[in-house]
Length: 108
Length: 113
Image 1 (cartoon, rainbow over the protein chains, first blue to last red):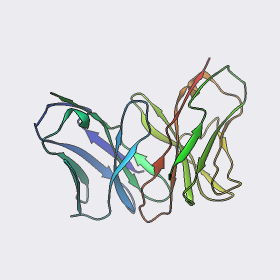
Image 2 (image 1 turned 90 degrees about the vertical axis):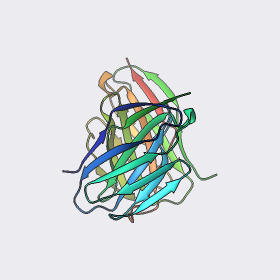
Image 3 (image 1 turned 90 degrees about the horizontal axis):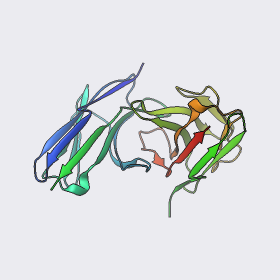
């Protein structure tokens, strides 16, 4: 059975304080690992797809990396507008299996 | 604008009164899926569809029905809603299974009293 575990559940950072979010996974036949951002009451917003171990992708202050067992979302010098819940998901066949997310709060 | 449109955004209903939540996408995507999101449980898949007339159960299908008669539409039907179906529902679509990410709708907040 596919499993996705995210840690920490919640993270509070000062503006400019870099950190990383973790996503550990087990899946048969990984077709992709996804990172989404979700603001309260809204649908998840796509950030990155990673397909194979060693792959990295960047977007503004975010960088996602992938190994065979986990993925990291690195946040460099975060700003208050980066506050959101970050979701990790794996795709084995036709749909996504999500972790429970990391709720990030960035304070000025 | 490429998007997934869900209606309604908010719905309050009574136990046992049949309802349908509509979902439509304008991206010609093959795959569509329904999720529910509950505090502490995260996003859980209800049903998914690989193409027209092809659907399958996700992790929490009990109490729900779906149909895919046209490629763009994937309605979620609750034949006899119960209070434990109070949740935030999301429809999503994807172009195919090469690890393409899903595009999500804005959500439907359903309350069953």
